Length: 90
Image (tube, rainbow, N blue to C red; front, top):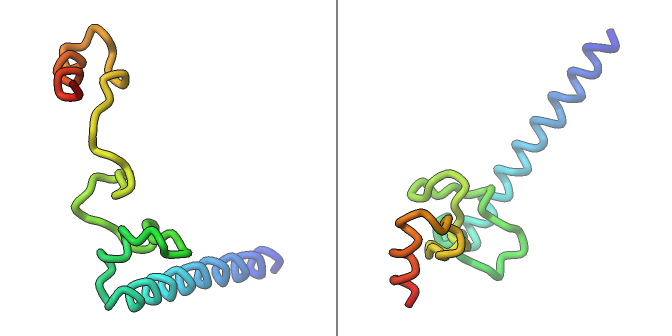
C-alpha cells in the first residue's frame, strides 16, 4: 500500500512540473507577442527561457548566447585546422 502512495505522490510531482513548465512557456511567449523565438534572445527576461522554448535550427546543446567563432587555442597544435583558425583571427 505504501508503494502506491509513493507512486501517486511522484506522479503528482511530475504532473505539476509539466503544468508549471507549460504555464511559464506560455507566459514568456505572450510577453513577446506570441512569438517564442523572440524570447530566446531577450537578455532582460527574469526567467531563462532556453529550457522553455526550443530552437530547432541549432544543434543540441548550442545556445544563442554561445559564440560561433573558433578560438585557435581550442584546436591542438598539430591539427591543420589550427593554422586556418589562426589566419582567420589575424
